Image (cartoon, rainbow, N blue to C red):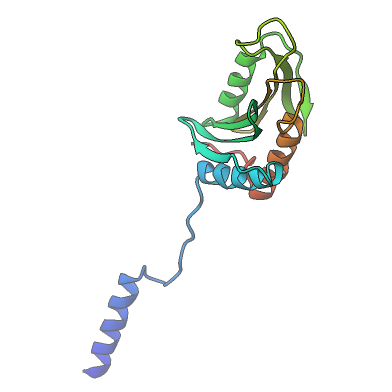
Length: 174
């Protein structure tokens, strides 16, 4: 009788603990991976800058850092349910600009005026690239001729390297 009670108790414990006792690890969401990537990228490209933050958007994640007043860089990673939708979003932003290549992904790079400073030097340097399910935009702003905001190419390279390390660019379908 003791043996039957022990076996019954053991079976109940196995059932309560998930049957085999095997723990299935949680798979991080694309947003969790993007947030972790941007945290590390911010540490790489803005290591000694106190004005740094990583934030959530409606469709992804971003980071912002400002080495000085009037100088900042913002990167946003926008998530799409499939690579085709991300590519379509990239194409809508093209506006006739020539498409380059960044690590075999399509890239748009341009400069533009800030609305408060029309007609002069271009205050924004912009990189927009599409990688699998992601549309990545990096915007550097310098309101003076000193270009001290982290460069979009450097920030994009950090996003690419850290993203590849974290598996950010693997195709994921909803």
